[in-house]
Image (tube, rainbow, N blue to C red; front, side, top):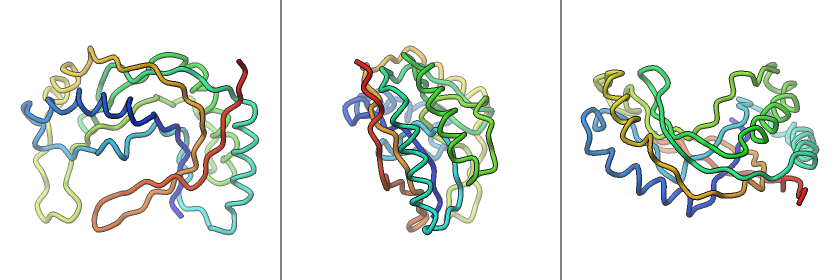
Length: 195
């Protein structure tokens, strides 16, 4: 099972972001990107990679313990940027310190599965589009120039969505079906209520 952990924004926040992203599809270079769908938008906390099904109870126990001691927190999807000339993303604002602490704790809890204990590079974001070749297509899609990604990111930079509360930690599975990647929440745990 190919697994990762995530926080999932609520559907109204994702819909508002989808409405803000829609006009970007008409900008130069947008047609050469592989756009992700709102159904797949999430805030990845830690990648686990391939995990044998028999180790799920052990993994779930560790994640439950993390959720019990980390509080729910207020976030909003806001701003945009790019990672090199490959990824266009939407950013996150609000109590990102709490999200970062959650990511660090999750990374520590899953270190036995990943061998990685460094959450320092954590950058909360939702991946909106990727440059590169389409899966299942023979010819590569021409690479989008960094300047075009800058234009797309600048167009979305003023965006500030509604505030929402991150209330659950999710264990997610990534599956490839018919050339497309699908994400499914296998289990979730409520974050602590410190109100």
